[in-house]
Length: 308
Image 1 (cartoon, rainbow, N blue to C red):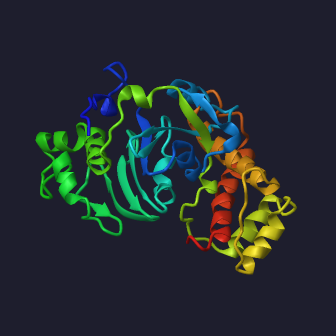
Image 2 (image 1 turned 60 degrees about the vertical axis):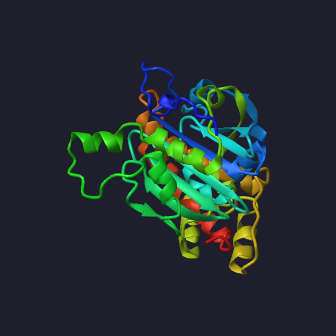
């Protein structure tokens, strides 16, 4: 594995090469880059070459605050780059089906994290600042490599300055070093910021394990939102009730409505943090958007009982 300068991973504006305060990277073994995008829920009709700057420009009200992911190949791995978001960390199980996947999230306003999965099962995950608190099916599986990457801190540290430095200085770079030890590859800053093939992603179309739901919740939301006459919805729900597999493609009538509902939910949420768009929705419109944000995952749970 080539050793690269990883100072960009934790950099701040004005301090050198800078990708962002929020971004996620994922690595998928033995899968072509475009296929990895599809596993993440990539929307085929949005495929285009984009730079991180061009992706950031689409993160606005009129464009619907899309989640956009880029991809390139590195050795036997596909590398996914999400410059302004974190949805990759929610689909690591889907990325890993039949293979292996790793995801690293930098999030300066929430919990930065690392996730490793094999064949649809999350083996190890942890907060980058507290790697001793691990979860997953096999939380100690990567421990020797974590120690080698510098991701080990005393359980009894007393939050003094040195302990703080160990936990909070360069946590993303350490997570990427761990990733490199697992994958044998590490991307350069120039590689992750190049103009790359990218797609808008809607994780609803990935095969990630859905959150648990119940049929009565779906029925109530469908009635509340007045979408019972959506083409294909009643037939899909009836098939799910019979225990039959339900496949909704991106370009089907129902699939296009799901995409629209996801956009309404994103607008309702993201516009609250957008000074130029905060008041473009009425309270009622925002609440309706939030409710679509409940309906979409509830439908995923109803349609994908085989993954639950």
